[in-house]
Image 1 (cartoon, helix red, strand yellow):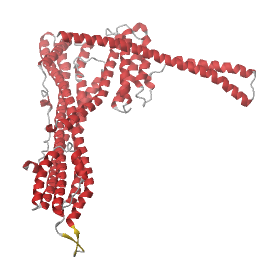
Image 2: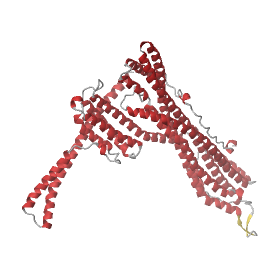
Image 3: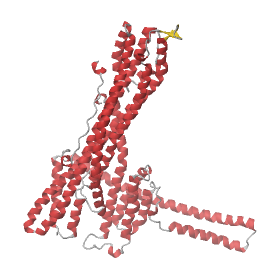
Image 4: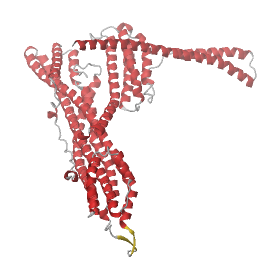
Length: 237
Length: 393
């Protein structure tokens, strides 16, 4: 009995440590993603600054020198390109509903990213749930990659991640902040409903994960049993 | 030896139809599970009765009853649908092995000494002039046929592997199905307990709160009974599917036996030919392919080694006696034919029995589809409602 309790305790502790580790992993991932994005932006700015003057000088060679016009046009073009690059980089991303149909493998990463964008306006408990969901999505990616986009599992994943989840989060975000914590008709608050909804989705992702793995588990068990039937239990047949 | 002469393959009997009424109770629940489930039923009833019969909360509670066991039903349905094609697949495998067996028979028939007339007579050019040796020519044919026979035997061996793999898959599926049936059984137990408790609660409330008693009977009890039917129907289908796996397994086992025996008798006939050739023509008939097959696939052709060991001693004796060596060879060929006839008879009987099973199962599955559609429709309406009867894994 004592042993069992100790095991439980150790398991809890393990879960806690794993949770902290995975959370920091999540944050690291998020930071890495941001860093990559800004590196790309910086690269685009540098390329624009080099390529545009060279292009203008080259056209000058062919069409004859532009004089003062060219001198003014070059910095103008460079600055415009900077403005455009920065505008697109800082622009908020669209919801993943517009995800093309065949990109089922990219869906978890896309959803994860989308969830990151939504975190700020949400209550703390909901943010925790989003982190849980993001972590599960990570393990879902390799499973979805092997799936035919038209398979029932893929359709389910698409519906859950690209439609039902955004609908829930957007539904909450649409509410004026003053109403977010006000019980509706004596029932639970919208905040509570959001968290419950996210819990349901979290559970459903787990189920999906299990279902998608079921086939592989099945195949492994079958192979083991086959080897047993073929080489071990001759008299059983 | 008598047993080996008569190969008996028993076709599996068709699976009887399981009615919904008899479906429950096949998977036993232990006392611990029962008391745990009873507790949940009790707390649900207490909560339900404490609510105002006209409040939306009461409605929500009742609605939970309509989706009770949704996941269990869907899971079990998914399994049974997959099982439906098991017996059909088994029949397909039959046909693969069947093709190879037919090919083997055709090849073997060409070598049958019984169809060659008098092999001991000398061969004559234009029917008059003595020319060559009939027997020598006949045994030469073995050399050209051996690679063909070897290839067929290899194919049969891999066909046998397929059958074993099929049985392994069925074994694993049976476990999954058993688990699904256990969960359904728990839900059925809950549904029946709810039925009894709601009925009793309704009678009890009749005197103190007639309106609530009416609500309990007309909504809650009604949905519980509807759900019980759904669960029992799905249970019947699942049990049927579970039972239908058995003939598929047995069919495969019998077929494996048949393949083993066909391979054994063929190899035995070829060995006899080697011995007879030696005795009659002093010709060293070398059937490398077959010898190789013997050594490399001794474990594939299960009983071959053992049986051949016993047989070759006898053959040696008979051939050495040299009274009727050709007769011995003819008998070896008869053995092959007997085996193949037994397999053919088995297959046609098994096919009928399997078809009956599949038909019964498809009827049941069609019937349950309606129920699943209903439960799916109900669940779409209230996806976020918690399930008070959710079973732990």
